[in-house]
Image 1 (spheres, rainbow, N blue to C red):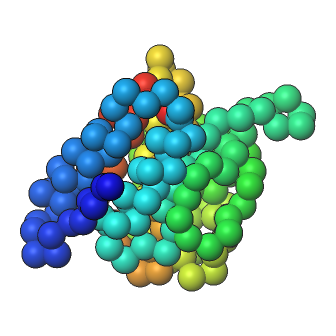
Image 2: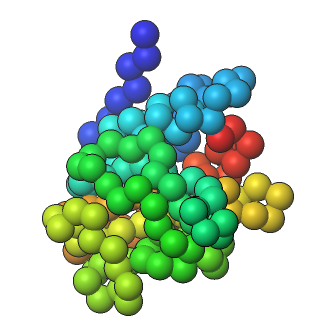
Length: 165
């Protein structure tokens, strides 16, 4: 049995270190990427406070033959299944290969409102061999919820997962 729980009084950096260690322990040696994403989505929900959605979109091929993001394992309300590259916060992260830290999603051009409660968003690309293969997506019902420290913690997690999903 696994019982990964953050200490509510520890600092943010320590919280992300423990999240990284828990994700490493759960995914190391497991070859099934979907299982790994499912466990990490659950860990994100446990370790990152003030979320209303935590999960993954993975690169896939759309009906037109073009790449798009396809919903992966997550925790939260039902979500958009497919997102075109370059559209919304997740699509921007997939297109640029850069983390998107958005304090107010309603001010983000082309924001996709899968959950009307979402006010801020953090999306980090997962890159393997120079290509985006997925993104980690975190939504919060609080404006300005995410900081550069959050971005660094999620980017570290994304780097570790790049050969595990």
